[in-house]
Length: 174
Length: 246
Image (cartoon, rainbow over all chains, first blue to last red; front, top):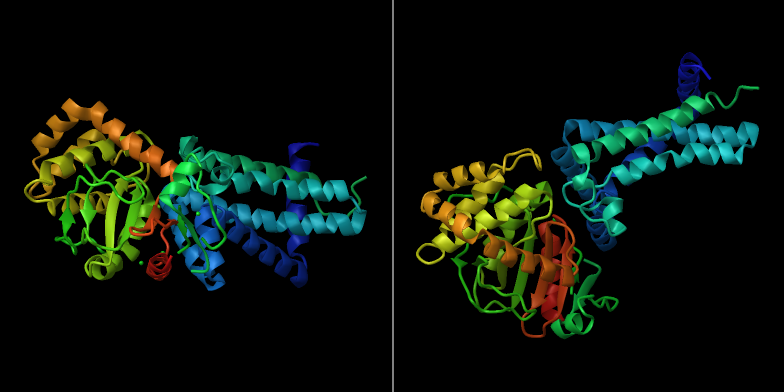
């Protein structure tokens, strides 16, 4: 597949995810959910304690951890998280479309699996938390270049690659 | 707060450093997170002590705020490079100092937990040397130093906490003899670093793995719990209530 074809398929995927009001809403909802997940997993111990105590602390946790991500990884870091969430929203809707139109369970699950690197990269680089922290690798992200931003970019690239392969699931690509 | 992980000193020791969680109660700790609390003077007395706490934390070398007779201990594990610690310093800490600590209900112990980068270790060492220099005659000066660092905090590992910058901050704080601090670091760096490392190792036994983290301990019953992250003030209040009843 040529670069031009990949780019066209990427735009086709984004176009599919926003073509109708229903899909656009689903994309936005998935993106919002992805953002919450990415930010809240930046410091899982904190999130678990706070939300375990009272779910109404969700807003407090989102604001605090968003601010912490920005303070740790800079504007670029928080922008990458937002972008990652948006692309994840598109990927989820495209994956559902693949499942509906082609019945391609493997292809659909492949699209969604692109989300995983971003989840890992979303960890609180400076505070040693994040999913790596939850897995016992506290501080691992702090040792990564640019507080994990390179990992975030890598995760984003993987996700975009999956979308460029997927294209518009409602069209026949054979 | 719906859950408070607790443990006793014996529980911690028996578990070889692994905190036993017992449902509502592991060392732990609890679940519990905003104002600008850094003023010119400490809102509660800063004191030095050579005692050991009910959970075995050696207070020698650590700044303590509040009454030595307070029924509850709050160990505050912090890294000067941690932005989330900065949030706690400006949000919940001022209320804690103005209420529970000033009222003699809670004794607050500041413990360095440097792990974000080399500058974290340097800051912790310089901090200990500042404390050594001021604790004898005017321990309250330490608060001005501590507040200055958080006021000057930059992005982690960006160079804002280099050795030279830290000595520069020390020069700006009235009451701190920056030259004496530099001499302390030069003469005692390894020894001070070992003391900091010992605190970090013990923190691990308490289940601390990130900053800011807190251990809330009932000094009489040795029951304790852990609070993770810069949680609101109300969560600390809940933790104190629970640990008093534990």
